[in-house]
Length: 147
Image (cartoon, rainbow, N blue to C red; front, side, top):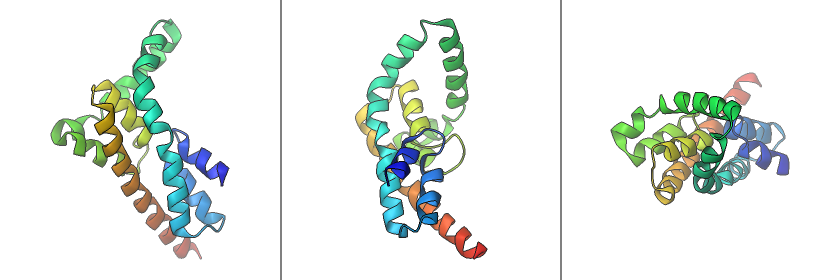
């Protein structure tokens, strides 16, 4: 179970990796969903509180500044939903289980746009809950189609 929580908490895999793994290992869908969502939400408050400080430190070194600038430019390209719908757009952004959307990118986007960390946490969490349902149902459907 800890490896599923860890996988869900990682920036690349998040729910898209953790839920299929949990279901493959035989966890009931509701349990797979709950474990993965909990794991995915663990880093969010920490990220929302510390990303600003991490950015400040990272921009002091040329290599990390260049890498972070690249990540930030790519992230800011996805700000359209938030510009259009405000905090609810943040929920929509996180809820779409596609590459480069999710809790980590949502937290980075909220930080870059200077959104309130408390409000961002609520709306990112809502997006994670929706994304978890989508990934769980999609994975169950894929498993049933294969079997």
